[in-house]
Length: 130
Image (cartoon, rainbow, N blue to C red; front, side, top):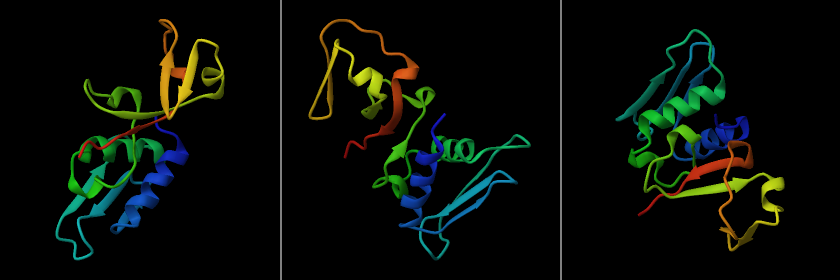
């Protein structure tokens, strides 16, 4: 699941490009291709109750490839990762300071095979390959 901070940042970034409407109690998020409402991207969460994080994750999964999202930092969850995709990964502090790992120029180097656990990852963002 993406974090609340990631969800809020995504909504803020998207709202800088277009109008965004969110109704968390009803599980609805909508964005517009432009302010003239020519293209509407509408996502409805299918369960009775939802969180902001679930709502944003569902919207992103539904509309990941639309042009409207091209210049926005896209938070993703582990289950959204695609083979061959490029992602920015922010590690938890404990993982970065481990003696088996070195970070240089935002690239993670492993000195030997070291399994990456879900708890080692703080945030993941999709990198657009233009």
